[in-house]
Image (cartoon, rainbow, N blue to C red):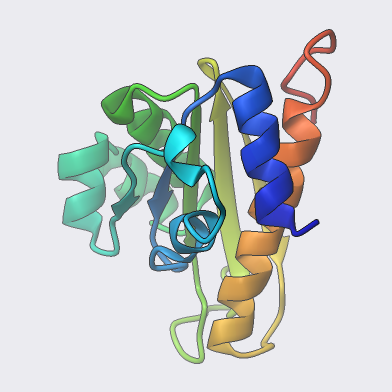
Length: 165
């Protein structure tokens, strides 16, 4: 079974809705999820917020957070995940921001660095992955795989604590 099918099944099992706030993935997380039968049972709304202004206007990311940490940061991914969960009224919100390349990287934030935020029932956790200079589209695809795998892990069994680092 494909990762996106496993994720949809897990969300249906828990009666959870999911929403995405995507930047560097440009809607790929949401787009792959809707390839799955029954995706409409778990997805109502998602956002592609490529511009900083869109992150602030639609998701409530604070300008100070972007100024202090840069748009590619766990702090921004955290606020994106919380913001999309709140706006969409979903139990699961995912924020993704990164440098897909081929340009735009710096020594501190190289091409292939992607930050993720996962908000599940109001609890938020963040991660940063360094995919390297594997090509723009491969960074995006690898980010989607990471999101699906991490969500399946975090959603786990209902008896265990959902958020673990």
